[in-house]
Length: 624
Image (tube, rainbow, N blue to C red):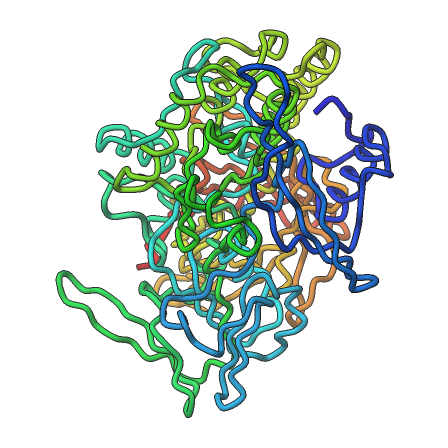
């Protein structure tokens, strides 16, 4: 926005940082006297101003607002010339269908089931994993919060089951795009054509759906397809995306179990969780036993019917049970039959740029400058509500919606001046009136984001290698030429290697189990363990530590990925002096999107009693 973030703010901020930013924004631009806190709005209804004495003048539309001051428990009422409803889309928990009408359903996020050994909790009530130590947890849902909670709660729970009714494409916060590793929103949302990218795309055809599925799979590679989660089966329908750095790693490693189905109920006596699954055309039921907590990541409903007059709800064609798009509004902001009433933030989507533009449209309308194309935008909203199959979000074409609002509802001084060409990354900072300096500064920051790719490679590699591998290691003793017709003594180790995400999610564990062929017909069982971590002060290195007794000890290698070789491998190297022996390590990994497909590790070891080269070639083993 026009209010810059503090210097040094991370790319992905935490909720407390967002709160601090919004507070500073309000302090800069809003008179504190405008705020009335601890007030619960009870009713908003239409009324009119006293008739004007001027001929042919229509009564001005006013709105009566009634509220309760919770501090004094006093009732108040006042008529306003304009009202902006900014209560947000995610107002109250939406529970699974089997709880509709149940007395156990509450709006505070917890279902009271004292008679059952299993407690249902809504994701809105989830705080942290420490509340679930040694619990067996079922997490219901397949979108952002469900996957993130699965990953987080796995740090404390003894068992985590992810119950998914649909399969999303699981993407981490940083992804490869155009030879760079970018924040996911910059990678996924780049202009498909020059500004203005209008009309906004509001529906998927089978062809556009298949194209989007293929694009998302190209980012992820084969990692998800070979996991117990799998990939979407019907590519003719709109795809969905969930963002999580660790969920897929934990599924692959077995720390999170996946059950494909829909929660149908919880047995009050046994606490067993009933899941409806489908196999072909047959519906089946699966019982999950010994589940102590069920976390319902089943979305939210808005609460407009708690305070808006029924006549307003009828005008909006409001359907409170529709968690996708519950009402018809132009740009989710205005309705031509409701002058001086605007909505801001009634947008089911993750991007604040839209809400900022909605705020400007609302301000412009309340100032008497009502956009001319309200009816067209209203028709677009209605068509989004009616179209089947529905996309994950009503406005999935983020750039198209930004451009549509700007072109059709605002003035040309908000048109972006930079990054207006096909393939360019976009930012809300580009849509500022008189914001040339802000836009240029943001453009430079986007270029800096792309330049950070080498520093992000360790995170990408650490996740990309998770899974089971077959390995074959050849050891050539260069100074020992006595026992081999090929001139140097050779030994072989072969077996399996497992990379798995650690319990605390802060590292990737390496476990090798193999057979060491020390002589023809003579083999020894061997194993070794390492710990791969990306330091918190991440300066672009992946550190490998020795493990002893299951505990991390001292560093072996510090790898920095700086280039791709001619064969397409990302290459990192480092030396390690172990007492008098020098280990020169070269780590080469080939990536298909976010999936490692081959790893080659070479050590050249020289010391008073050592002179050998070890080459390990790893190929991925299918997990299912």
